[in-house]
Amino acid sequence: MTSVLVNLTGLVLIGFIVWWFWLSGPRAARVAASGPVEVLVENGVYTPPVIEVPAGRPVTLRFLRKDPSPCAEQVRFDSLGIAAELPVGKPRDLTVLPGQPGEYEFTCQMRMYRGRLIAR
Image (cartoon, rainbow, N blue to C red; front, side, top):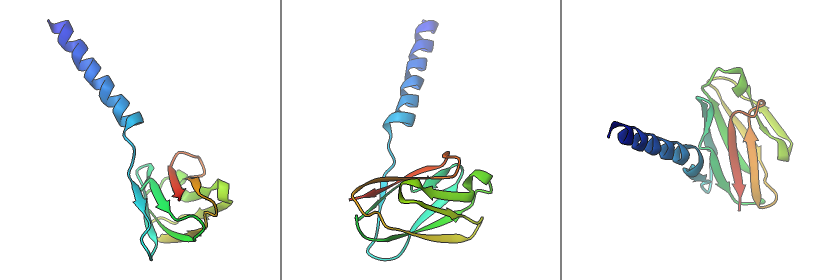
């Protein structure tokens, strides 16, 4: 009886881990008509991690870095050729222009922090 209970508990935990890392997706933040989109850089993640914007229109992203880690010093949009330094505790506005519909990844310079800009 004990081994059955241990196995069931293990299966439940495995199911939770699969859901957490592979099946649960972040909700996308949609751009308002005006004003910058605030992106928090903290604890190894960008919040929100997914941002939806209209294609062909410039959008301003306001990054606020709270993480003093050297990995968080920079944000990069490699497919758009954009990189910017992010000072700790000070907002940094970055205007990007996703010309074509699609997904544009943004990362730190070590590619550990990851986010997506979705142009529709």
